[in-house]
Length: 233
Image (cartoon, rainbow, N blue to C red):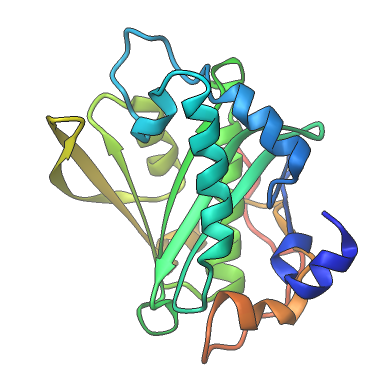
């Protein structure tokens, strides 16, 4: 992203880094790579684990992905935000890690979701990306809880959550494309995150100017490299 734009909108200059990955607001090149990658998330005969737009035919799927990215930036405000980060491996976007919150200054909890293209699954990238966004949430924004969920059968998502310290937090039913679908909820509180914290995650760029973009009435902790345990796949 342009340094001039980052000067106006600090999130554009933020980078979350792990041993192998970099997470950042997607630029034009990222968006093109993600549009292509979104067409190969899982075999066609497996249960649908992700947002329904990811299963739309081309070019509707790609256009919907772009709209969601632009909408998240356009609707950003301190009381309600949705952070969409491209997951980059060797400079190439291979998936998306997002985190959203409502009334964060009071409630201080976040929810996360992600997807990675099928050719890069099973190599620990999902764990690293989640660890990075959790570092940002807990160590820099002062979150008290992080929530996530998975559809029955999505063993990979459940495994990542349990590896990072989440515990089961109930279930809920919803209508997805006219089908009753059960979603299982997971919860990670600050104490459990600290116990399972992954080392080698850094948050760079944006500095204290993020306080006016991400939240209100809370002071951001200084950005920088933090400690933790060694990362696992």
